[in-house]
Length: 387
Image (cartoon, rainbow, N blue to C red):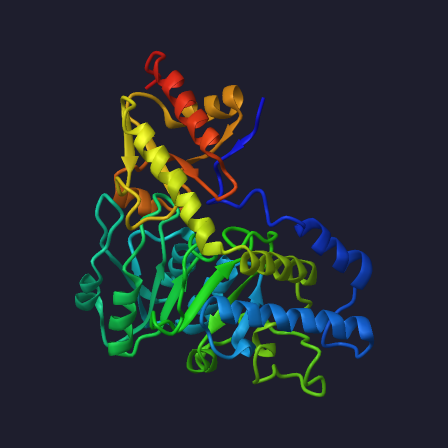
């Protein structure tokens, strides 16, 4: 049975060609730490880390690469900002489409006296940026939004939200888990104060590596969540005040950084924006194909405009989990079924509590694979109702 992978919203597969060898090169040929020694191998690793920061600064149209911080992924990046900034009595604004990577830290802080409001969305996952204005309070210290829904792929009006945040002097945090490496993201033009990204999705790198871009102003306002050795200012028991060391205590994930460096080189050399055009063509073909199937609700936007290559389906006459299981066990088609760590988004979309079956495509998919998925769904839906 062929394996058809449609779960790129969870993690990309396949990864950038040669990624395993790049990670293996560090593990087998380099193997040293950085900022702790001055021998040649350590210097080589340090230069690779610096080059990776510079690649990320270019990718996101960001300025100083010293303000590109390595983390374990976008979840840690969001936590660093949310928990490093907000204090009891502070207020935050989020969208109703958020992932639990944003919502769970906020709910934790709510027990300590932090409050938040949600920008309401509609059943297509769209939000009105102007709806933020009535939610702003004198104690609003953060606006945090994802760039695109991990449930239905709908893009949020980030540029408009950024302009509002800037006009009120409120820091703006963006979660790019579903957009980094797919579409152009201009940190400055979007009016961002912080941007969290992960390496293992659109950037085609390994798991366990991601990062956070911070303006100097916000960096000065954040209390680091983790303190420890940085290999710098070792005569002091206080954290360094300079970047990126202030937020990078402990040993960096250098195998992950080497892998991310390799995948970013691949994207730079292979016209990653053209790759996005390909994955959106697969999205168009899939949406067109499933539109003709009975008892299927296409969650979110009906076409390709205003969305990413993420499509959720709700099967109105049968259990979604049964459909997902049959796709996997009978056809080798891998999707993700459930609530996708985003209950607020599903409540907004009208797919709570049943969830949905999510298909998320990449440029490595093929037209034949899209046809196979539509055919498999057609065959499954010809059977008796399971709900």
